[in-house]
Amino acid sequence: MKRTRQLLGAVSAIALVGFSVSPAMAAGTTAGDSITNTVTVDFQVGGVDQTAVQDSDTFVVDRKIDVTVATVGASSNEAAGATGVVRQFTVTNDSNATVGYALTASGAAGGDFTPSNVIIFDDLNSNGQYDSGEEITFIDSMAEDETRNVWVVFDIPGTVTNGQSTDIILVANAHEAGSGSIGAEITASSGADDPGTVETVLADAIGIAGVDGEYTGDHAAAHTVTVNAAAMTVSKFSTVVWDPVNLTTDPKAIPGARVQYCIAVSNASGAATATSVVVDDDLPAEVTFYPDAFGTTGDVMVNGTLSGGVCTGGTEVDGYTALDTNVNESLLDIAGGETRTLYFQVTIQ
Amino acid sequence: MRILTKMICSVLLLAAPVAAMAQQQPISLEGEVHAVVETVDEDGNAQVELVEPGTIVPGDRLLFSTSYTNTGTEPVENFVMTNPLPGPVRLAPDADPELVVSVDGGTSWGQLSDLSVTAEDGTSRAAQHSDVTHIRWTLAVVEPGQTGRLEYPAIIR
Image 1 (cartoon, rainbow over the protein chains, first blue to last red):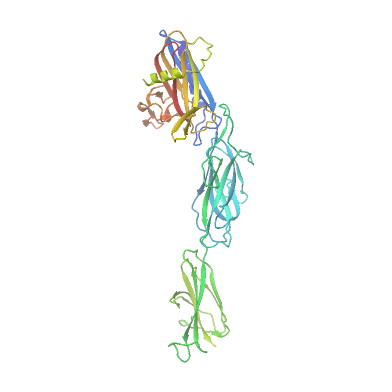
Image 2: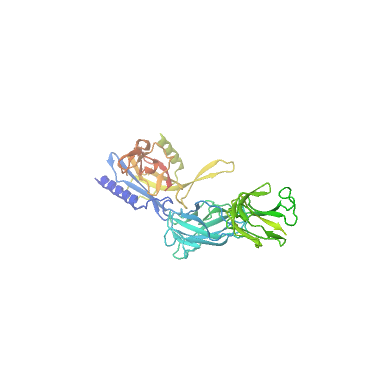
């Protein structure tokens, strides 16, 4: 009977152990949880059941600091001079304890350009996006396995040329958690170990070589930002199309002859589409605008093509007279690798 | 045979002090936990060291062991050592497959490969190392003065 009671007691203790431990999460057993290994031996001597013998050993789980910074979404090309460019990241606390994180964001050393006005945003009001007033330099407290969205906003200098790129890097560095602030940077425990004391191990991976380290309590990730600038070139051609003597057969640039000016605007292959392209051309004093050169009333042709130095096609524009000394027209958007032309005729005085 | 081998090895290694016995119990137990640390020596050979579990974090490997000694004058029979696994650990995948274990809190016992787990929806699947709740060793007899050690490897959840 005595043995039976002992056994029941042991079973109850087991049940308590089983239920008092918090469930293990992805980050693992929470720092500070005790692990108690208890054994019970039942036995007989001379065929008689004896009182069960128990022994146990306890130690605490130490603090494992681990953090992951990851990029969210694609990083599309940006225009030179763009302001308020946004890239999203996540910061995940993989530690088995509540930890705060200092955040820093910057362009990579050695990048083609340096982003300016770099600001980090959190979603402090949990509306799923970043808002003015949610600028942060740290996350004061993150629970085990918690993930936060973080946005990095920056400007691209206008001097950046087509094809240049740099990495925009976010680093999260583990600090002691706080409320409204963060505590000291977390370092690995040194010295002799104590089974009864919660000690700290830095267990983070390396995110970006040269930026963060393995087992240093920090982690980094980067979006590569490539600038896709328009790369425009303008060419101007003139062709004598008529003179009073030769007419259209091998006309010469004599007074009274008509000359066609063609302005070709090209955007380099692979460059960003150029928008709001305006051609503005002041006529030399020695020439007079020649209206109605195209079709019935077409004064200027826009958005034509260039082939072998000759401008053709396009859309007629009316509204000029012989008194005009300036041609000013907008062209359609010019994609990378595309050329659009504007052409008109003048008379040599 | 496997247990017997361990016992013989343990006798040679025995250095553990015999716990003070407040009661007149013929069996003394000495529980120990060691962290398993794998190192590579100068020749590139992997070595396994057992160290005191000072800094233990999730994913670390531990070896739980219990040394027993018959300090009495009579043979001890039907020696049954029951070891519930602490909640924060799971049985390591390379544990002895012949270990007698339970996956239901100590109600039913057997080798892990013979056990199954029933999910809440009534479906059944083969039991895994992480399902083990208890380990049990049974020795028919422990002679007076005989000592030995029983152990299992575990990983911190």
